[in-house]
Image 1: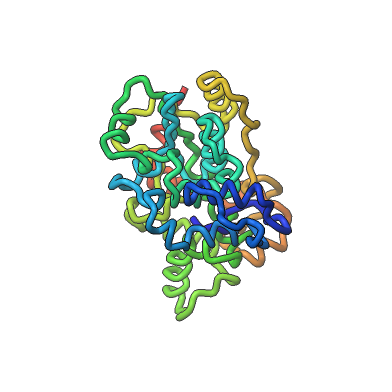
Image 2 (image 1 turned 90 degrees about the vertical axis):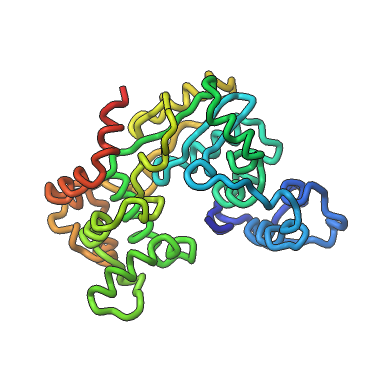
Length: 319
């Protein structure tokens, strides 16, 4: 993730925000705050992230855990471990973990929760701890370990609408994820340079995904069972029942959390349009919002049911 993964920037950054960000990155307040002026929150955290002082600080160094364990969120005092899964309301539940943990720099980290927890030692990820401690958290039978599962076909459609249609030319953070797919598909069509404005169809995206080894897929459409690793997750929730997960977290932590999110991308909600799965993004944008059946044809559903069979087995086992 990049610092651009934030809410829309405010016109200027307050001194309070500057001080809190300095404390989080460097463990100190700025020496001459009256001389500091940032036009945006992005500019503030980019400046701190690139500073030599931060790069030389222990706050920039994580342990040797690898994906997926490195990115598991942990709240040691509340004894909660969360497995974030891309496109499964992970922004919301990462923010919920920050809130229930009592992390002192919440205002700062909540404005860019993906980038800041990935790149600064906040104590929110298992990779922030000594390796022995992190492994101890994973092995602790008293930990409330939870994850959110989502119908793989709907998850894939959501990723396509968000990243390959609505935001396909937004910024490098999007093309970092979509680039390998767009290049591979367009190259097979005879194009020498990727054309993100032209993009790819949902059918082409599906065919590309199911032809790939699962471990090599981008995290936003990588099978969900790979996120869970070899660990036991006693508390699995479906995307259609996020409210239950929120309630259980509130009872566990005694912290009031926000209501769970709705479908932000709007994928799969609207009218039916035959052949939408073969249309390019510009044509799709000229239409009203389309129902999921416009994309998820019986043929595509069958392909995804076979490819993501382990994920479907997990979801079917959730009570």
